[in-house]
Length: 206
Image 1 (cartoon, rainbow, N blue to C red):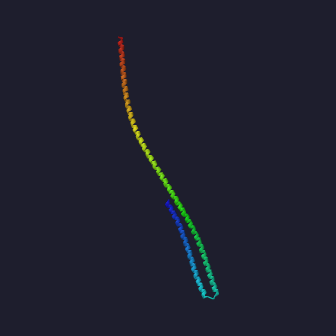
Image 2: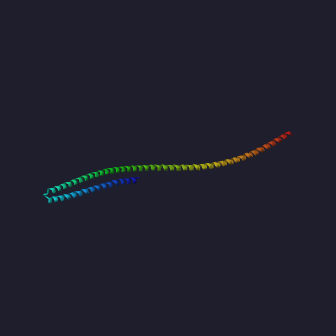
Image 3: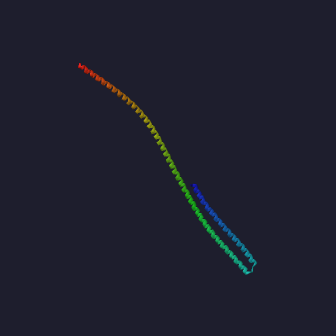
C-alpha cells in the first residue's frame, strides 16, 4: 500500500512539472516573437530614417514615413500588450498549478500518514491475533495432555477393577464350594441323627 501511495505521489508531481514546462515553452515562444517584432520594427525604422534622409525636403514622403513609424510603433505596443496579457494569464495558470501541486503534496502526505497509521494498527492486530492463537494452542496442548493422563488413569482403574472382580469371582467360587460341602455335611449329619433316633427308639422298645 505504501508503494502504491508513493507511485501516486510521483505521478501527481510529474503531471504539474510537465504542465510548467509547457507554460514556460509558450512564454519563450512569445518572447521570441516579441524580439523578432522589435528587430523588424527597428530595421524598418532604420530604413525609414534612411529614406527620410535621402528624401529630405519632400514633406509627403516624410509624413508617410512618420505615419508608417507610428503604425509600426502601435503594432509593437499592441503586440507587447498582448504578450504581457498572455504572460500574465500564463503566470496566473502557473500559480494555480503551484497551489494545486502544494495541495496535492499535502494530500499525499496525509494519505501517507493514514497509510502508516493503518499499517501499524494492522501489525498490532496481527500481533494480538498471533498471541491469542499461541495461547489457544498452548491451552489445547494442556487439555490434550490432561486427557491423556486421565485416560491412562482410567486404564489403571479398569485393570484394578478387573483384578478385584477376578478375586471376587474366585472367592465366590470358593464360597460356593464351601457351601456345597457344608450342605453335604449337613445331609450326612441329618442322616446320622435319623439313624441314631431310630436306634434309640428300637432300644427303648426292648
